[in-house]
Image 1 (tube, rainbow, N blue to C red):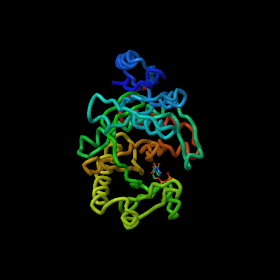
Image 2: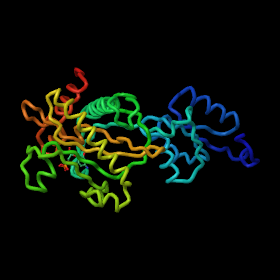
Image 3: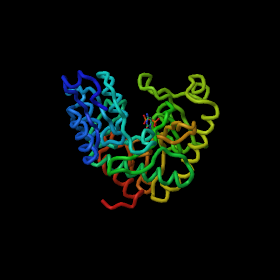
Image 4: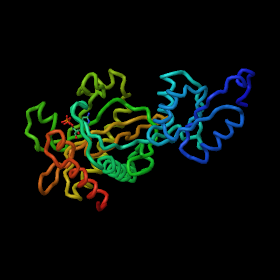
Length: 313
Ligand code: CDP
């Protein structure tokens, strides 16, 4: 029973119901009101955080699968601002293991110093990434991706993220070209795999296997699996892109652990995190257009989207 103490009949208590399914939200709110409490409904995670801040509820009933911000993230933020009991609601017992990833139209570079909005970038990247995840999963690569939820959202499995950025270079470009004084476009004798420690305060420094192990970021077995999966991802994607007239110059991926300890690809591959060059024209079709003010940034993303998914805009 909600109404268990004498005090609660004197001071009406407020319950914040966070539920995006209107029928369910109404049913829960009615039940709470019938107990003599006040119920307020929020239909997404971000509004829930806002409502919790202004309403100061005595209890929060929280769904997990929510638009804009998922229930677990909203709970974390609400409790960080003010301790309040939160009852997590879920229709399925495995929902706590899922996250919703939203793709936005914001583009950033140089540690987010440079920033802009590119129309429909979120839609393009979600479609590109969903298609790549589908291709990789079909070829036996374990991925966190579960399904494309909407134009700009995906449902993925929650992972324990490994703070290593793995960069694959089929053609030398970007930081490797600069660091080693190599001309952009040179094809290395062997595909290069770089590891970076994912730590923005340190500027995501380049590390090697010894560092990764010394920092306790991964076990030796995990590192071997990460290299195996990375090689497999590259072997699958290079011919796929070649088939649509694009050189997969380089890309960055990240991995995470599922509850059973197995390693999965937990990062998307899009023109935000990969370099794609048109084989015929040499035109760059990725974030470098934004980094270097080449213009037609959205056009680059759109080309990858159209060629990879066969979609006509
Ligand atoms: O991008 P930048 O030239 O600074 O660095 P890079 O080491 O040449 O990047 C290699 C590839 O990884 C590029 O496709 C980058 O877009 C991607 N990358 C990324 O997505 N995130 C990072 N933090 C670093 C690189």
